[in-house]
Image (cartoon, rainbow, N blue to C red; front, side, top):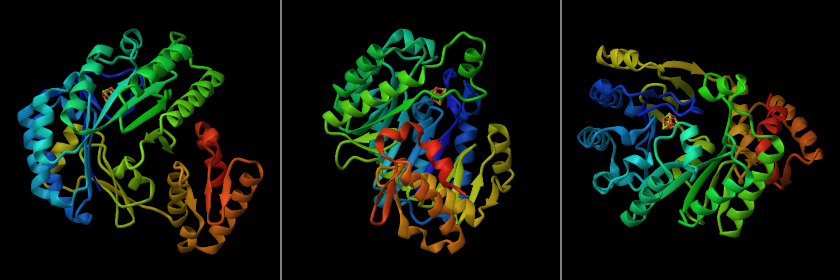
Length: 369
Ligand code: SF4
């Protein structure tokens, strides 16, 4: 699995805690060159990837000629014939037939687009640059292009009541995307949203409303034949995100670009979240990442946390490779959560029931060591 991070955005959305910088176009080309250098140095850390994901930031912000340069660099480092899924994230305002044609000509076969809401007032409030009409035009272009696509929505947005959420969800579902993601807004320290909430300018959605929104989401998705296969992800049968599903099953991945993480050779590696430092290290041919070997306990905890985000849950026999004293401790925690009804167990598997996924973090905290 190969991930590439493009850290540029037109402006900063108020809720965003991804590593991204508004408008740094002078750095675009040297950044793409640094990505090429890092790929050359590090592609050998993983077997030939079967999935590629270009995320951000806003990868679709790059002008077409630099986009072409980036796609060519990737194609020169990867055997594209072995790539089953190649996704690029797009923002609605960047979707044009030319851009989609360019992506497809290199083998990109999936677009992930952040719509977030179909209400202009809310979009403006959270700092999105597009309008609902732009999102609709972009979806129509995606439909015409024949590319596979996924749409993102957020619920629990500032002042968004049940009626507005239900309308955004219905409008998104009316386009029948094969895949969509729906996230409950989270208030991350360091974001403008967090500060505005502290200052009393925004009131956090009540837990009761968030739960009602989540239940409505699950109900509507199921009624239209979607599988809820991960806390925030829904797909029509056969359309799960191949790339993301492999993160959740613990497959090694190589993350290229500033702030990207990798998990290769049993070691977690972290690239600097600083564009200039990232470019400088690569132009000096220096090692770009910091490595952190994981303890066996951390590996077990990672496995528990990633697997229990999904409807497949955790396969108990997959714990066989861990020392018995750790597995025994986990089993005791697991039995307590089973007894409390926070887990459902089958012969060799445990899952967190869908109705509790909104508070899955709390259940996982009780399970990990
Ligand atoms: S476009 Fe995406 S990455 Fe950029 S600021 Fe908004 S949420 Fe963050």
